[in-house]
Amino acid sequence: MTEDKIKNLPDILKNHICTLKKSSFDDCNSINMCESSLKVVDFDKIPNEYSRGKGWANVPKSNDALYINDNGWYFVEFKNGSIDKSEIYRKLYDSVIILISLNIIPNMEFVRTKIEYILVYNSNKYPKIQDSQSRSNTFSFILERAKIEEKLFDIDKFEKYIFKATHTYSKEEFTEKFIKLMEKNEGIA
Amino acid sequence: MNYTIYRIVKKGIYMRLIIDNFAKISKADIKVDGITVIAGENNTGKSTIGKILFSLFNAISEIDEKIAKQRIKEIEDSCRLLFRDYSMHSSPKSIFMRNSPMLARIIANQFDMELKKNNRLEKSDIYNIIHESVNKRINLDELEDIEWSTMLETMTDKIESIIGLSEKDITLEVVSRYFNNVFHNQINSLVGNSVDAKVQLEIKKKLIDLTFKNNECTSFSADIAILHNAIYIDNPFIIDSLSSYFDLNTMDEYLRDLLTNDFKDDIMDGIIESVLVKEKLSEVYKALQNVVDGQIIEKQDNEYYYQRDGFSKPVYFNNLSTGIKSFIILKMLLEKNILKEKDIIILDEPEIHLHPQWQVAYAELIVLLQKHFDLSIIVATHSPYFLDAINLFSVKHGIDNKVNYYLSSMDNDNQVQMERVTDNIDLIYKKMASPIQILDSLRYELNNK
Image (cartoon, rainbow over all chains, first blue to last red; front, side, top):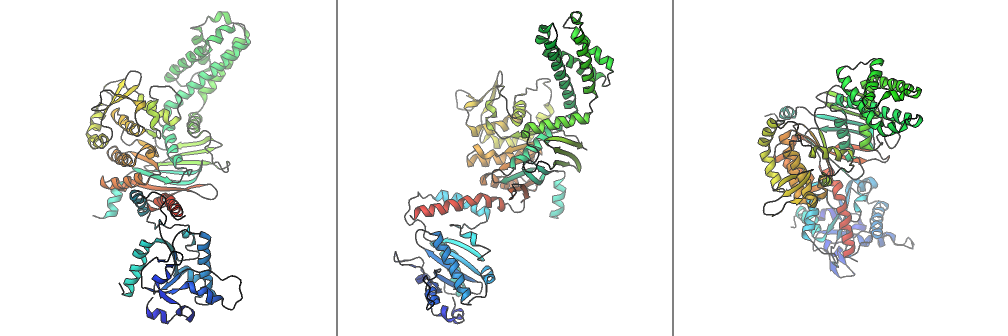
């Protein structure tokens, strides 16, 4: 996020800026899932602040990072290891609810037209299944002809009625398809 | 050159098949011009399109001959039943018990000859023909009983009514039977049987129109005669049964008859055609030789063998790999001059027994056959390789403007729709790609447990 963008953010977001690298830190395994110095909202910190003093028994969950540029808003969730769909789903719902109830964004229409959701996963943490580059090529052959971007974990079902678009990227794909692009736009590449 | 004009000129004549409420299909409007690819998930009526075209062509090609045959068959059937009935109630039972099928055939053959000379027979003529036909075989003096005279009168009336049947009525019966054989009496929509099923085939702006109600053809009209064969290929194992007489389904039986027909009536038949075919064939043969480079050897009684160079003995057809069998069918259709220009070929999932490499080879053959024989080919497929190969080879061999793509899908009311997707084939691939996301999600899950 450019300094310009950060400057115009509401305080609650402005107070929690960090690098994309830091927001991708996996506490359990002490590793970062990317190396980028792009500035993002450390969205993990928002639920606590949002619920402070409300007396709720449960604090909402949230996605890891929020990146904003002129083209749109991007929620990023880093998942190193097994994916618990219900957890992922709760995080994405709660994140949207927080933005709306803090009046940071006006309504669902804003989410549907402006916000994209990206799930970054770390493939093959414990590779049990034999890898085959040729299988992967075969699958790519079909996916290319179908002109579709592969989306795992049923995430694509949140497209249109909640988010403008959804993506599921491996660490490598995230670097290729998101980080490099945004760094180039910001002129840091 | 103006591309639009070029396309129109090049396109020329094509067929359009319009279907309403036929079996699973609620609506379809299919362009059959060159190669028509039909894709879609299982159970979405892909094969139905091919079967309708097959039935339509083969039911009404040479319809006059079929009508005449049907009339004679009805005469034979009625005579046999009446004889059988008579033999149960009269004294000289044994003669008729034994001879009734033969007598019925003799009478039917006699009527066949008489009707070719004169299609308006008086009642007295009919009576005489029956009487004389039977008299040739059996001494009728022994039978001058009252039951015999009654039976003879009944038979005369029956045959008179059969001869009096209008061509239209028999046509409806011929068409009904053909379609019912192919569709096993499930022509009318499986949901909501009360709606009429309609099939229309438009060729050169002329129309063939069929309506079915309760699985019977209730109206038929044709502004144009069908002169070409429609061949349905869905089962490579058909070549295992060339020498057998097993009952096959209507489509397979038709193909078996074609493949085993010797055409020995006149050895000069088809010679001109055969020379023409050979000239056209060099390109097709080159493609075919890549897979089946051996010779088909026919021994007696439709025993077929395949001899490859470098093998000391020919291989019996049954022992060939299923993939080879798929190609051998095409080779036989060509070598026996069965395939004629503008014929229809219907291929139901031809990729099923083929490795991707041969799927690609098969697709090129199909494209070349279309190009050189101006065939209309309907092909249902699930294979991304086959689909891509048809697409690419049709461009390579210059017939891409004669390839159309359709995607079948089922709506919430279990009704099948066919969407033309010629300009966005990726919709077909999208359906094929959905399992990949499921598999890759599972792979991730398993790798991260």
